[in-house]
Structure formats: structure tokens, C-alpha cells
Length: 168
Image 1 (cartoon, helix red, strand yellow):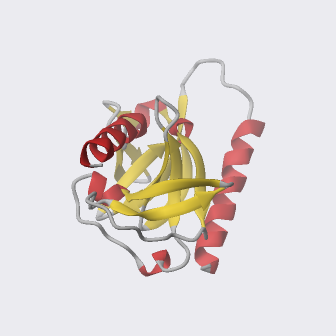
Image 2 (image 1 turned 90 degrees about the vertical axis):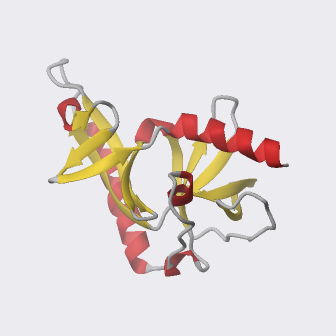
């Protein structure tokens, strides 16, 4: 497993935990939490409230499928979950970085009906807490001068599950 991935994950865990230590704001400005990643060729923001966990180092087993975005299956805490390319689901090509060979990184998510799946991405950037004013129209986050597309995770899970059931 890459030391870079481990150190990034550890920094994110520390920042995430620190967020619970900060005092609750008196309503002056709402803050929103995101995990920033690179998926395909896009920089995207995943709302922390929609994520069950960030996984790295789990084995990914390729399986035959008619669903192009399916990267394979992985076991997470005793549950086998399908892992899909987030970049492909966002309309790009299925991209797999060198880090995927033996040490995939993906976000574990859950749909409205409790369906669990992984959304794989090429690079884990960081955990951020931003003022609500840094989120434009609910679709874009501005952080340190860069724009990140906000992924509607629950809606995406619903579309993936529906498409997978249709294709069998």
C-alpha cells in the first residue's frame, strides 16, 4: 500500500475527528464537510454525510459484467460490495491509476434502500470544512481557489442500482 495514500488517509481522519472537537456554531454561518477527490479527469467533492467510509488497501477482484463502470468486487468489514468507477459514472472514461493495482481507494456509500457500493477514484485529495457560502447552487464547492463539482451521492447510487438491475 502506498505511503502517500496512508498518510493522506491519516491526515483526513485527524481533520475529520478534529471537526467534532470544535464548538458548535451559533448559526452565524453553516459549515459543510466534503472529501475532495479526483475522479477520472474531474475534481469532485463528496459530501461527508453521504459517505460510510473511505477504504484503501482492500483487494479488488475483477468480475465479468455488462456494466462498463464496474471495476470489481471488494470485501469491506465482511460484506462484499461492488466498486464502480466514479469518473465513468460522471460521464468520463473508466480510468484506473497505478494505485489501483492491489491497493484501491474508494468511498463506501449507501443508497436510500440500504444498498452499499464503492465509488472508486484516482486520487484522494483532502477532507475540508467550508462555509456554506463556498458552495454555489449546491453543485460546486470553491476551495483554495479551485472548483470541485459536488456529487449527489444518494441519487447516483439509485441510478447505479437501477441500471445494474436492468442489465442483470
